[in-house]
Length: 102
Image (cartoon, rainbow, N blue to C red; front, side, top):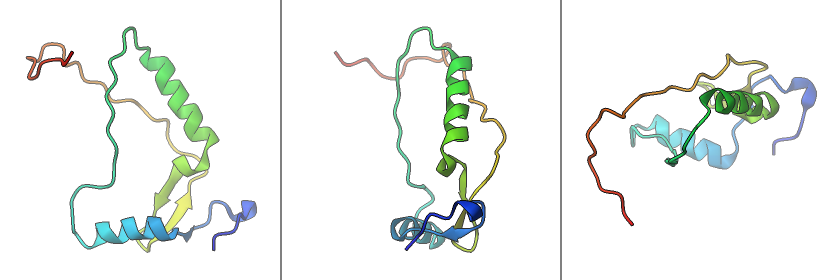
């Protein structure tokens, strides 16, 4: 059982059973694709600067967004991380490869 321990929050601690199962699956080489989710949004007038600021505010506020899994199968919450920089690619010159569904 994992117990909340604010004094030692930046020390390594065990993965949960589910986290460990995902981690073990990655260690066995069963797949080269990590668990992930993909969403695509079509947004007009998207403000990249505001979005990047919001993402960094979330990372600062929620510790588990600064967590990493260590080679020994424990996890650690980092006190600070570098600012996240959104990667942008302009694909407007690329040909359309699919049609929009109604």
